[in-house]
Length: 101
Image 1 (spheres, helix red, strand yellow):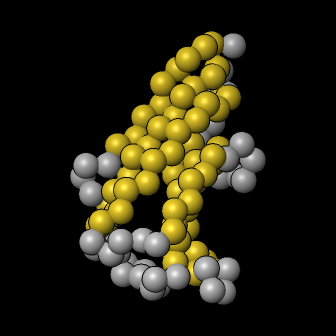
Image 2 (image 1 turned 45 degrees about the horizontal axis):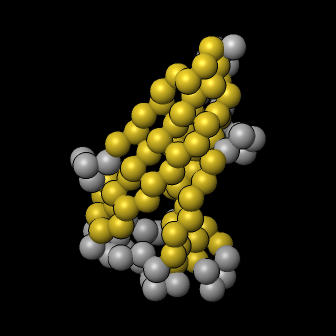
């Protein structure tokens, strides 16, 4: 149990999209919307786009941290499920213990 610094630097390549879409990257704990961190960016570049997210979260034994991506159609304010993209091998993710409970 303790406080952890979480960080992700995700690069998306070859994104198929419309101009009116934005992307959210989300950290969630135990697949819930509780204690989540998120970052949203609009006007996605189809060649490549990089999103960063970081924060401090409380984790307990057996907690599972998940990174999820949501592509949003700004005109309809709905999630888009028909996109294709690649995640670059230059992407990174880390969790560092700051303080034990």
